[in-house]
Amino acid sequence: MDELTAAGITDPALRESYQECKRLNSLHGKTYYLATLLLPKAKRPHVHALYGFARYADEIVDDLTSTLSHQEKVDTLQRWSEQLLQDIANGRSNDHVGRALVDTVQRFDIPIAYFEAFLHSMAMDLTVTHYETFEDLMEYVYGSAAVIGLQMVHVLGTVDGKESEALAPAEKLGIAFQLANFIRDVGEDLERGRVYLPLTELRKAGVSREMLEKRVLTPQIIEALKFQIERVRQLQREADLGIALLSPDSRPCIRAASELYCGIVDEVEKIDYQVFTKRAKTSTVRRATVALPAWMQALAAR
Image 1 (cartoon, rainbow, N blue to C red):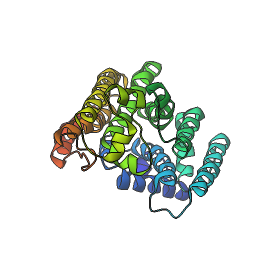
Image 2 (image 1 turned 90 degrees about the vertical axis):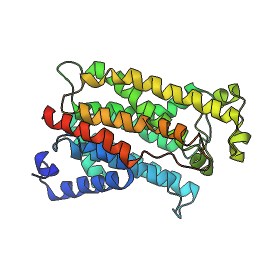
Image 3 (image 1 turned 180 degrees about the vertical axis):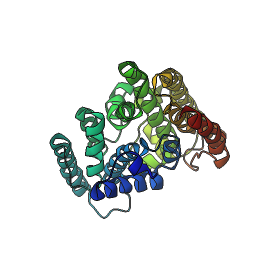
């Protein structure tokens, strides 16, 4: 039985929307997609829908090949955001990814506030180029990443009566994923005119934005990266406690995602923090090392 049929998704137009979201996930979120395969078939389409929505919005903001001007991107994102939020409120959508998203939101009663926060953060990316403090950054990260973890709890399910307890760890894991990406992507983000590492924390290590712009690795920049890496690992440790609150058939997926996504910082260390000239990548060997036992655990849980 295919995933969509297992999830009870039979309407042709709705299936097409879910398939588009799955395509976006498999194309752009290879590690995330791999982890999704550890879920029962009936849950996978809904994770694809959440990813497809997030990826499409991100593409409007960050597609470097786009011919749209900055203002056109602002206007496009605003129109699309307003329409999607209206669609969620109305319970129906004609958008090519919105149709699957609205169906998932309705099936799992996911709060619309999560999507409002996400779209707010996407809009910030078109206007904000740096964050002075970690607290300032958290306004962005809550919407760009924490709410993804919160959304996922609804789809993944929890052991009886534990949903409210699972939310805080899920939020922390989403934040850890995002911060790991910021560390890996320092060089790429500079190309987009952005610095996500809090400036006050950089200054404590003796790093200025001007130093980052030179794209020359220094002992001070390494010190700053080490500080950010330890934060990711601390958040991961705190979030790991919440995995046991999830439904047993969802735990292998999230354990694997946690190890692979937060493991990005391990790969940064392996390339000696050369974030300006190299891109830290999770090796195929490590993916297999994580995925194979997780797959056995997933089968046992079913």
